[in-house]
Length: 129
Image 1: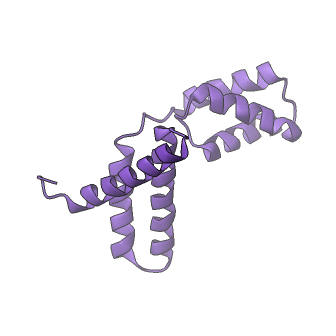
Image 2: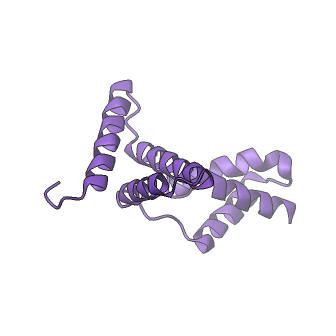
């Protein structure tokens, strides 16, 4: 606030509100709240860009970037590939029907450092190849 960064302050206020709401509900998973809020901002940004509202899209992008600074670093593609390979071998997954088991294994091993959409794509690629 002292630096005069209004967008960052607004984003942090919204995140703080969501964190407090999550704490009241008893979930207490701060990283999940941050990821959810970042995802909301990214989705809003894409919708605004599709509708020609670049001013609002830029604001959402800045908020998402501010939230991202508080998240742990994402796994690289190589690290994710290694986790997927380990999950496929450990769970015995053989085809698309077994995707759920492998995805669950990867998500628990990644401990919140990777997006579920990326995991799903990598597991599907590994099981169909």
